[in-house]
Amino acid sequence: MNGQFYFSFLNPVLGLMLASAFGILWLYQREKNYVIVIASGYAMSAMGFALHALGPVLNSSSIRVVSNMCFLASAAFLASAVIARYNRRIPYHLIGLLCAAGLGGFCWFVFFDPDIEKQIYSMNLALGAITIVAAVNLATIPNKQVIDRVLFAVSLLVATNLMVRTYIILQIAGPFDRYEDLPRSIYWSTVQVSHALISIMLALTLIVAVALDLVRQLKTESETDEMSGLLNRRGFDQAAQLMLDECAAHGRPAALVLADLDHFKAINDTYGHAVGDRVIIAFSDLLQASVNPGVIVGRIGGEEFAVAIPDTTLAGARMFAEGVRVAYGATTIPGPVAIPLTASFGVCAFDDGDKLVNLLRRADEALYSAKRDGRDRVRTFPGESGNVPHLPTDVDMLRFTH
Image (cartoon, rainbow, N blue to C red):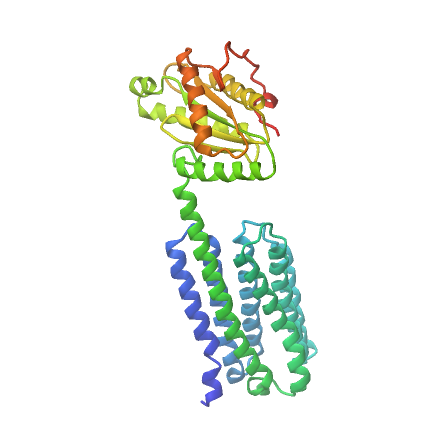
């Protein structure tokens, strides 16, 4: 065995190491399915290069076909994993068609019209096209972060390596008369070196992407109330203040609604905490169903909720609160007896340059007024007399539009 033979196992060993690394990472992040797909992609790459190294030794065309099937599977897995990271629909049919075209062309030029260069072009064009599918998906992602741009750049680099490098090197290296000459050629040396470097580059980029996904997940969990699925106090304060700052910067109105579930402690004491939890969840679901994107909703206390609404006036926010109040009063909670459900609301408008803490204070004063006046009503800051007429429980009335 010469040095060239041992060098040919660089990519199999590297592929197995990277597959193992992503496999171990997946064991600790099983909900991220795309990570195990990445591991599978590197495993298939390792197998493909290992079989390719044995091809000249065994002198078997079947081994070469299986080896190239592994390369296609590797590209398909890695492209699918990159797309899946963004929760996008994976174009299985397109990727499958490209794999079939590449393998079909390769087999044709192996068994029916033997031509080593055309075998190489068939495979590399298919592999490059699969990579471009991933790149196109990355290019259309809105609100790109730095890691998204890096992944896009690496995808283009991979496609360029597969297509442009292949053409240039084959023009320099000239035609191959025998398959046995391929492992000792300049072309195959550039394949091994470039693939190893790009594999490491892509793996590092994907590891950073996984790490950022984990950080984002931990941040979301730290800002989310587990029971209701709404933002907790910390998450609400941050998101609402950002929204208010944006409204102030563009001269847009905004309003804040505070809601408190009436007699919640009595419900807990009378019917148990399980029923109390269902009450919290029912009100949370109602709030989530009642707002449009851009509205910030949070559970900021045990039975206290807050809704920060952009692009609305005090009157609009009051109408929203009244709609939620009516709908909540019509809500039923499964149980042995019917539980009367009511909530009180405090509403205030955003003054240009206001901070969230000031809105919370004013809305809390309005909420206290609603409690003092008998509960199950909406009050605004500054104060006013009289109740708002009850509104019909209508989906169009309930959903806030702006």
